Image (cartoon, rainbow, N blue to C red; front, top):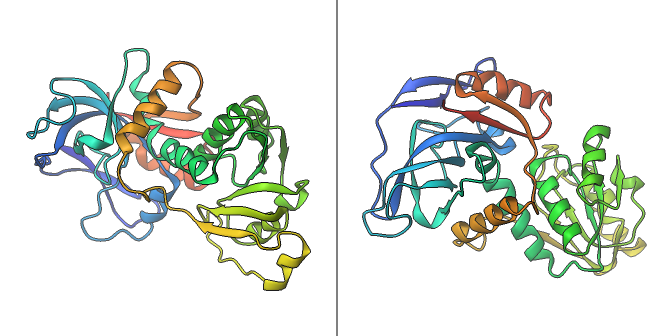
Length: 306
């Protein structure tokens, strides 16, 4: 089969190559990929790929071989899936507990835009606890996770302040329910009950300073790729006794299929809106990756295998 494999070359980060078809484990279904989306973390890994790396975590397609153990779809079915690797290919083996059926009302492109960003958003908000009536500050809000968090939190009754430097993306976040958009966390008008922080660098201390006494900051990324420096005594200026929680979307493990089914249901009923910034044939993946790196694409980039 054809698959995209990393090169380690920034000018052409992936190439289309012939590789063996996957051999599914008993609990895995074989999916013929119709579309996949690209996540920013995947682009980081392409800068220094390890031997045997095969990118691809967000896919939508058709089950062509059900799992041997009888789990998951028992016949040919349209699905959205979240394998841990290998999705940028014609076929991928996906654990059945990381699959959800995709209804006819949703396209493969919409489905492929859901998994990693959507699951992260759902689990972030669960980690934050009930948000109704609470003030939430969200940094790095212009990405896929930020859009889903904004829409879901606002629908849940939160007053969301979104941080983005992009005026166009800010306008869209207001449409999705944000109460306010600022361009720097230092401009946000605290205090906030919850801070969801994904930027790192100087943004985290600035966001932390807007947190209410005893509030919670959930740290779920470091898009700036710059380490954070904190001063113990700064907490006494506002966020005294605050909690900083590290977040990984796969902890707790399991339940991916249930979360995917939730995301599919919310999208199919018009309560969640994937933000798709580019759709292209997968032969153009290298160009898409370069444009993502240079921030020329706003929203999810989805590649189709048609």
